Image (cartoon, rainbow, N blue to C red; front, side, top):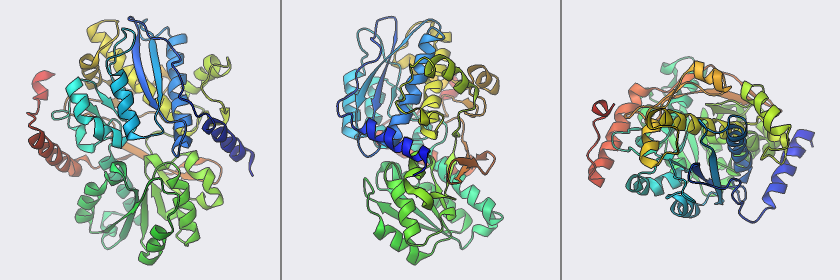
Length: 446
């Protein structure tokens, strides 16, 4: 076994051996910003959660210890071990939505599409922003109807569009999609089903055949699905799995003879934890990458100096440093820190509550100059969020696994917002009618 592979497996095994919930790392105080963290370091999705939360916590420590907090306001956090269970994430939300020890909550990171669905009405009623970058309910990008939901960076409709746009590039143009057969193998949850309406719309526009094949949680056995894929003989497979179901899909596809370089994973099926366990079968596999792997970005140099080299990293296995999920954790933490900074510029240098947190995220504007200042240039695309647009961003690149590392194989590919927006607005309007919501007039508010 390759040494890097062994290190990843050892790190996961050690982390999975921890069966008790992790406790608070920083005690909250009234003059601190409290951040509840619904983590999942054990269970079937731990291979994603372990590096993800390490990236988040390393950046929050960096902000506290190197920068002295956000304008002097320190960040306090409390972990809830959820094993990515929706019920447990909801319990964590209920436990900490009112803050801790006098420190208020400005937002709640769901990091789970099923949990974002489950908490949608609660977050709106409690006026707590639900933050789920590259996840969540797609139509909640319409901030007029969903003022307290933020599926930032790249919605699932956007991911579907980027994937189809990339396939069109590979096939030689959108006109070449007509008659093609594209199968989506998806995690049978609200996360996995989220792209179905968008892909149906794009199939009607471009004339390709759209076939959807579900995989039951957690996805440890997929012979039935990939036997069906072999019988269908599609041109491409869009893989929308998560956790252990992704390497199982890759290995099973290889066993049934489907070429791995005709599989494109979505954002949550494109990390080292998804390909290393699949072994040689993963070589050539591709996935969407709204943020790349790698540890050569400026922020990594700062973290090495101030966090890793001083033994303060949350990582138990430092081989995870700079891996895709670690970097996602960094990006998520940077986004919320920059939002809090925007909010403090308006409300004063103090902790923010949920209503103020909503205003902060709706005025988040991280341009290229700011990305350079915070060390994220090249790691995060510029992001501008508004009252009406709770996505911002809207693009991704495609990366390919060469057997040892991810290699970027495309430039930034923008989602087709012009095509998707009417569908998003129709679904948000239907939600508003169902729930008796009067959409906000965002232009007047800004």
